[in-house]
Length: 185
Image (cartoon, rainbow, N blue to C red; front, side, top):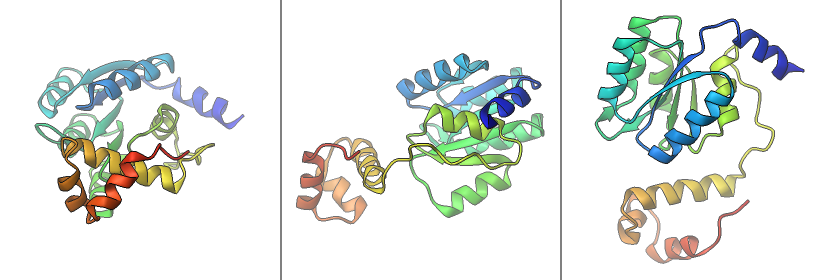
């Protein structure tokens, strides 16, 4: 019942959406998911292309990755708020910490979600009026969140076990055991 009420409210708005993320597979999946929810989606893989898209036509909604290859997604959020103050933006990141979350919200983001974010969570964060999305039906377990974080750092370190262990402040053999196991549910 609540989801229907939220969707009815969202239909009253311009549903243009800009998604800025350097992970091409995630960008494509999220764009498709948001199009099925009625958004008119434009995508950009870099800060520069995101800013160019904003200048051309500032969207009503935006989903922006925090860390991009050519800069910080916060720059896109700040530019969006300058061009269209009523726009609703969500920041996605694989590197969650309190300082960046506070900064994103101060610059106008309505929510801050950790990757991998579910399309339903992104949708709810974008359209919920009171600023609080409902809790997820099936949240990831703490073990799964830990595993996802380790996998992301491992990939960012070009699958170098020693470098990943150093960055995670973890013993190399412990990391190898974790990487050898299947993902927890």
